[in-house]
Length: 102
Image (cartoon, rainbow, N blue to C red; front, side, top):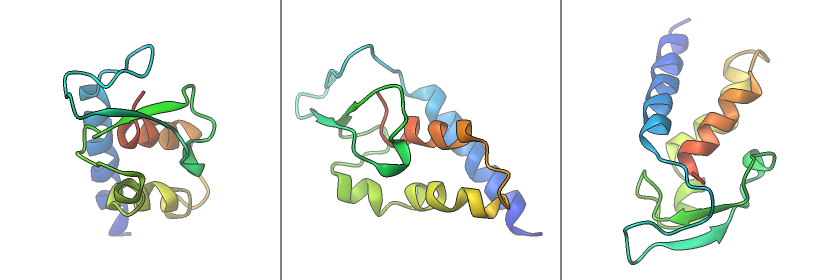
């Protein structure tokens, strides 16, 4: 199954990015003066422990449209099927923390 190593590499990359992103207790734009706080409205992140994020994200997404059209978001949407139903919800929440961090 050649897609499994690629999938694992993508998940490892998401984990590294999640560790690099520093969560904050509230929505604060951070050091970027152009950053703005917004409501979190990604369907796949509906059960996240927070409900706000800010743009730009650590992946330099500047809008919801940019997040939803990114390859990372598309991977997050199909990960359940790629893992043949063995998707752990923690993997999805990890992806959310990278795409739309607290």
